[in-house]
Length: 153
Image 1 (cartoon, rainbow, N blue to C red):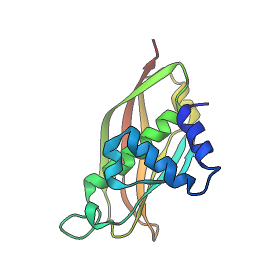
Image 2: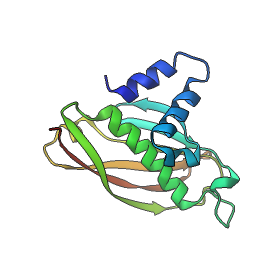
Image 3: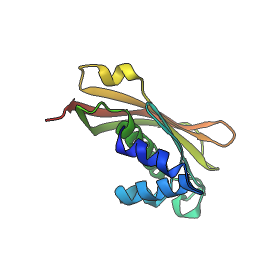
Image 4: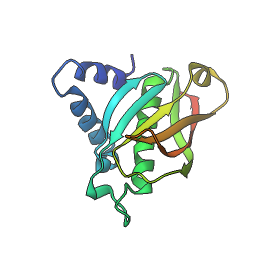
């Protein structure tokens, strides 16, 4: 079992386990801590986290800043990659394409998704579908994060 998935499951056994996992994930990749993500789903091929609507991540319009949203999408993708990748492969992000589709004026749930077939393919480019959704269900950001997946030496 991948270490990130094992940590998620262990944390799930204690009170405030999702908070603990999110804090530990932020310690491993400190830049992600700036948005204070709260992971809600961590499983192979599907990860969700919530970016709280806090002043610290606002832009001049009083909504969640576009780059904070991208940071949330990348955090979700990173957790997804860690729990989905086969043991004999490694990954690194190589690019991101996003569209901002609405104002993020509430907490935003960031979702990253793949399929098992994508990870089994011999093609090194692996597109991860990502999106951010407001509390009312409106998609505020969507796109693809491309990973470069190669055999582990």
